[in-house]
Length: 325
Length: 300
Image (cartoon, rainbow over all chains, first blue to last red; front, side):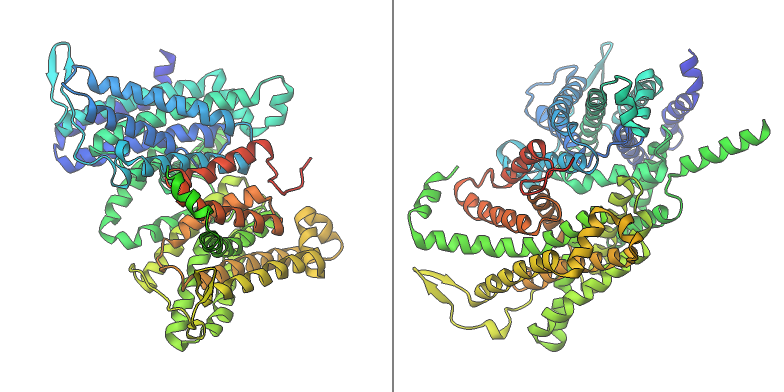
C-alpha cells in the first residue's frame, strides 16, 4: 500500500492514459502515445543498467530485436487463432530475450567499463548479422513484411478485436504501466540499492562480500526481459519487425531519451521518450535535419548541464527542501 | 556454405593472389582508420565514435578538391589536413570538456558528433552517391601476375600503405614526439610535472588520429562510392580491430587489419553466411580470453 501511495504518479499516468483516447479519439494521437510508451519501456529497462548500475550497454537493440522478431515470426506462422495468442507470444518474447540476455550477459559482465560496452555492441551486431543473413526465417533486410496477424484476445469470454489500434493501445498501456510498477519496485528494493552502490563504488561493494558480477548479470537479464517486451509491443504496434530494430544506431535512441529525461530519476526516461518521440514526429518532415537537431541538443546538454531534465529538477527540489529545514 | 568455391580458389595461385590483394586493399583503409582510433583511445582514453565520420569527411573533401582542381596529389595532401583541422575543432571545443568524466558522457558526445557530421555532409554534398574517378596518373595498363589482373591504383595503395605502416610505427616508437605521446598515454600528470604542455599533446594526438582517418577516406574514395553513411560500418570494424590488436599497438593493429581483410575476402567465398558474424565472434573470444588484445601488453 505504501508503495502504491509513494508511486501515485504512476497511477495518475495510468488513469490519464486510460481516459485520454475517450477525450481525443484520433488515430494519430493514439499511435504516437503507443510509440512513446513502448520506447519509454525500452529506455526505462536500459536505464536500469545505465542510471542505476552504471554499466553502459550499447547492444540492447539485440534484445529489442529478439522480442520484436519473436512476436512477428510466431504470429505470422501460428495457424488458426488461439484465444490467448498475443499474451502467449509476448510472454515468449520476454522468455527468449531473457535467455539471450543470460547468454550475452554471462560473457559481457566479465568485463568492465568500455570493454563491456564494446562486447555488448559486438553481440548486438551478431544478432543483426543473423537477421540480415537468415532471410528465409527473418525476411532478411526487408524485415517481416506483409503485416502481423493479430488474433482476437478473449477476455472472460468476450473476444476483443486486436486489429483495432485502440484496443492495441490499451494493451500497450496496461503492459507498460505494469512493467513500470515492477521495475520501480526493483529499483526501490534492497536489490536496487545494491545496484546503486555498485554504480558508485564497485570495489567497496566487492570488499563487503557482495558478488558484483552476479548482481550485474541479474540486472542485465531483468533489463533484457523488459527490453524484449518493448520489442514485442513495437512489432505489434508497427505490425512488422525490421532489421533496423537490431542495428546499433537503434540503441542510441533510448540512451538519448535517458540523457534528455534524466538518469537518476525513475521517470526520467519516460519523460525523455515523450520529448524525443514528439520531437522526431515533428521533425519527420525535415528528415535531413533530424540528426543535426538531436546531435545538437545532445552536445549542448553534455556541455552545459550533463544531466537530464528531471535530474536537474530533483536536485533543485532537494536544495529547496534543505533551505526550509 | 560454399566450401567448394573456397577450395577451388585455394587450388589456383592466381585466385589466391587476387583474393590476397583484395584483402590487402581492405586492410589498408581499415588500418588507417583503426590506427587513428587506437591512438586516440590509447592516449586520450576517449572512444571516438565519430571516427568513421572523419573518414567520411576525408572522402568528401577529396571529392570537392578533385572537382575544383582535378589533382589527386593535391587532394592526398590537403584533404587529410582539412580533416585534421576538423579534429582540432572537435577536441578543443567539445571533447576537452569530458575528459575524466564517466564513459557514458564521452560515448554520447562522440555519438552526437556522428549525427551532426552525417547530416552536415547531407546538407553540403546531398544524399546521393558521389564518386571520385581513379586519378588519371594511375590509369595505366594493369599489371598481370599469374593471370590475375591488378589495377595500377591497387599497387600504389599497397606500396603507400606499407610505407605508412612503417612511418607511423617509426614516428611513435623512435621519434621524440612519439615518446611524448607514449608518456602521455601512461602518465599524463608526470608529463605535466616535467613541463610538457599535456593539453597540447592531447590536441595534437586527436588531430593526428583524425588526419589518419581522413587519409583513409582519401585512399578509399576512388574505390568506393561516397555516401554520408559510409563511416558507420567502418567505425565498428575499426573498433573490433583496435580491440583485437590491442590499444595503441600499431603493428598489432596492422596485423589484425590484414587478418580482417583476409577473413573478408576468403570468407565471402567459403562462408558467405557467416562472413559477417565471424569477426564479431573472434572479437568476443579475444575480449574474454585476453581483454588487453591479441598483441597488447597485459595490464595489471
